Image 1 (cartoon, one colour):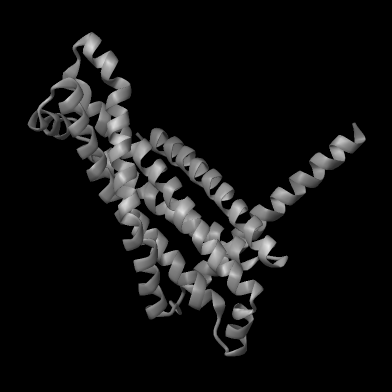
Image 2: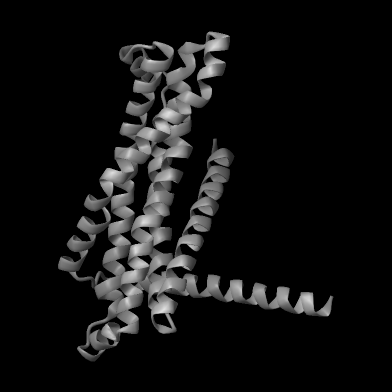
Length: 259
């Protein structure tokens, strides 16, 4: 029992230290933004890398998500003849919940992991130390541009993903349930899902902020050479996924409380 409590206590302390380290890194990043001291060229490069190079996988993820929502509900809808609710059900679940979360997780696995690996490699090969030698702050040159890019681009990617998720739902509804595209679009419009759409975009921005902070933190704190980079990437993906789900839960609670 004593040994078990010791192990549990050590694990709890380790988790608290990790949370504290991420929180302090987040505050340092915000401090670097007041006044803004980031590299514009590196920021534009980050926009292209995390956003433009991610839109293909986001579109595919979104279309499959919309299609799956309709497929899962198809049997119940046909049995109850409630085809007039297909657009509302697909739009509500995709815009406010499933779409942003799945896109965020996909973004974390692709962009967050790559960012941790890139920064971790720079740390172990002493490129970050070289920047400090040249009087270049790694926070301003490396972390802040990625922080800005991930927030902005995940916001835009969620907006793009919502469109293609509804497109995937419309195509699946037409093929499986024989619902015309015009009827599906009318159902989505009549459902008045603007609040859900805005909520999904807010979640996307918060997910981008979380992924940026977590991936940069694990990248900058790599220890142990190449194996350490591998561990950091794994920890970054896991922590980002937990952060996405925690933010989703928190935003859901706040949204429910203010309604």
